[in-house]
Length: 282
Length: 295
Image 1 (tube, rainbow over the protein chains, first blue to last red):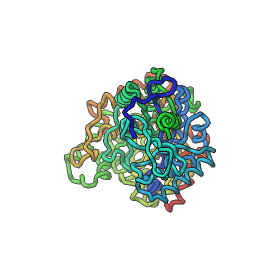
Image 2 (cartoon, rainbow over the protein chains, first blue to last red; image 1 turned 60 degrees about the horizontal axis):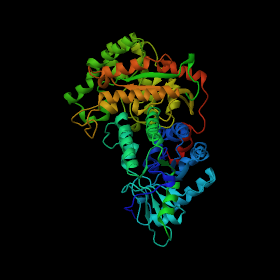
Image 3 (cartoon, each protein chain N blue to C red; image 1 turned 60 degrees about the vertical axis):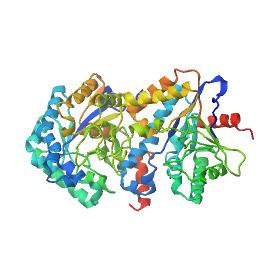
């Protein structure tokens, strides 16, 4: 439930920035329906994310000392294990994002459990971690999904869009609620910068936005959320905003963000732990 | 810092200026219903009418070489332009004979297109092309090997990297990968009816597009990569937009460590100097998996 109280943050910080990337690689609808195997060009477009963009993003995150959450479909971990291990080794968080970026709305409960089980095995085998977080891929989830997640060991989700601060979701049958850290489309790089043909994105092949004006939008979102003492997360994608020109855009954004010394830069996992501690009293 | 030193003579990054010269054949593939509609076709004929000459003019003014992908049929219909491109010292590369959507062709048909396109260009220029770009769609399994067998040594149809790479199935063929953000079409292509783009999007801001392209270059330059610009004469070479290109190229030329070269030159350097792709390269990952899915 959302609270009307002003959120509080650790160590007298005034607001919170939970930077997050979805490392989708070539997973998604075209892989789920098999069409990607006739589209090597499109496969390459996706593979660029873990192969080329991710290592440069990790360097940039080191430079700005920003702990970050990467939501990673397990298929990407299986195929780019070295790159994904580097995420963990460099102090960031890896969390669930499906096996091949399935829409959980399109899965039965059993299929959802299978995806979580498979992902859990892959994360343990290749990364030696147990993930705590989940961001639902491609659209919605089903009413039974939150309980399925808690049962699978998930403590927080970053899937919803309807608030600008974390909140607790009571899950019937479980004592501990699920923390939701909602994202906003305004902070999704797909909304401004993604473009592909066949499959067409945007569906009407609308123009790619100005980088300069996109940066201005993102800075305004950051400034507004920080001024109100909220928690801002992002839905960035290495294959989109980790391209060589756009990583300079991220660099400018991070420079802007780091001008404030009263912001708590934290992984989604740390935000979730803090929120539970502050707001869940059994 | 650049990721590593990969370019000759102390150059920090490479720039390859590529032009897709399709006349009306590109839009006929994209929207076959425009056949016989002169007003719509004239939007794309503008390239032949004015764009090619203006584009060659700015390349000559700035002293840069470029690489033109020309379907055989466009070359045969416009031999004077082909001669002008050649006379300007630019590379002429193959895009098949007819402008086709390769997803709709079998490997044998694709291979026949390569052969016929190369033959048409050879007959007109006296030189066999060594580069190839798929005009639309994807090559079938075995396509890269077919390129090799037709004497093609470099390709520019894939994405998935920002440096050239040797194809895992035919390392003699070097790929110069594409990037949507380095294409003029997504920003500027427009027709009212039939609608291009399909959503009837506004034409992008010229100034902001120039800003994007400059920032993209800054990134490719910083990381020491291969900036493959993809232009169309009917789109970029208008009186108003040619200035966008001129300003972009002038800003690139302010750096003395940028290698502006043809596709053939960059591919030859890569073939001589670079290691094979590693198993985590997207082309290698694709190669490992696609057979499992019945392709």
